[in-house]
Image (cartoon, rainbow, N blue to C red; front, side, top):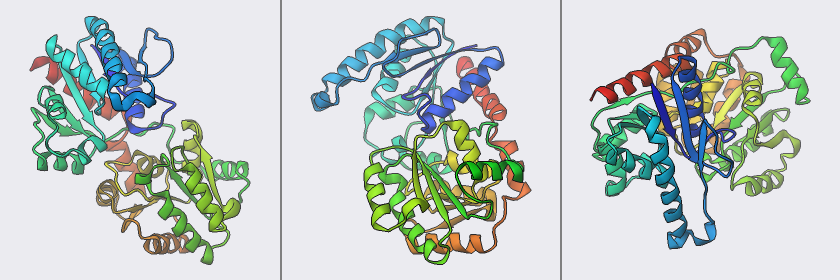
Length: 370
């Protein structure tokens, strides 16, 4: 089978709609299938990846850049479709919508995966978005909550299911000696309470509340360290906030961290802290659990769903409440532990790449047979 992945991002971006198509493409190739990608980017096209160039932000209000991007998407997709059996559209952008429209015109089956924002922010009226779903052969959702929200909004769904995101094999339980070596690389002792957040620095990730909570944590545990891995528009305000709170080197904004280093950090941490106000299924929290690291999350939809799946390995607290967040973290640090074996078993059965790839292959086959 030959599959075209249409996605706004690919690594080194660490967004979910970059990691899933990348990992899924790897798994499909290992099974002997052909995979190509269409994505935004300025790099040269290759046998594996074709790029649609983003036009200048200065003129975006005029719709001229979008029109140019749409035209480039159309002719590049037209060429790519000639050798493709099925198209997998990841989330919702101008590029994705144009590619899906062309699939319909050329009678090429396509499936869609929704990751979060495009559903959470849908007003129930956007006809272009509704058509994207209506004409798909199958629509997959990143979480049960996301699927429920789509049904609530009456998004037209010819066939739908929930396929949780895969966790790469690099995220695994590591021995105490390996964890200690990673801490030593960071200049930390094995006894240092280490908290980790891995998210884009964006208002929805709400690291502002996390820093406020951490300042409260340090009043009782002054030796604690918080690492925040990610980049984004909130970087400078968060750095200023950390300085104003007097956190010094105890709160470190690491910037963009390669995935292999993220895996080492996840295993080294005592606790993963997720302060987001909105999530579908937070892959970063799953990566922590796969690494043996428990999670404290706000009660965003994804955090609540993981709390139900993983029990007390995922503590859930109210959003934008630094006092509650700090209290939950301090309670954990008073009796620290690693994630329970049952969580590893659930990761293995529901969240590892081979199972996710097989489920998508089933969806592709259903799309071709419809």
